[in-house]
Image (tube, rainbow, N blue to C red; front, top):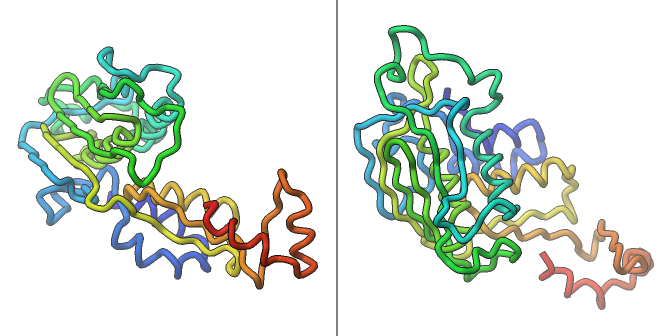
Length: 269
């Protein structure tokens, strides 16, 4: 079931297709891909982690029992909204609708009937400040480590930003066999980004895009571990921005008084 999740969300928008289709065809991720269908020995991992070891030993995952949780050793806990929301989001990315997934493996068939079950992914934040209430920056530490072994997998990072990258990688490690059983291999990963700035520029000052498409672009960026969204929202030919804090801003611009306002807004996104 080779689905390029990031691309699939964007293709229904004809105008947007030409902007990002080529990029997402190359970078697009496919969750729940069968390793037998992949020419790469690393399955659907993208980008390829810095250090990676995938073994033949298999574990199965069930939406009825599997959990993504804060480790007791973590400095973050329930209430860290960045991670709490990410746990729910990646559980859905892995399993989809529980009504669709919560089915027993086919009797006598598939890999799921004779392999151990992975029950948890525990996330450990090691720094005293997990940065739950901060914004990311180009200097944020995004290094993470993943160890997948039965019965509990471990994702360890210094702060929430590395944990987000690790959750994405973990979700890419999960794939289906021919009986729709979700499997993951015994794996060890140590990864960090090769480039501190990994971004996309979106120009909506000249090219109208619905809010839904902009939000989907942000989601597709997370699938590819991008960290900078450069939103070119205003320009001298078009100023489609209304400020709640400065309601006269757009009114003045509509009269042609835009030079004094334009430059600061370029760097605000």
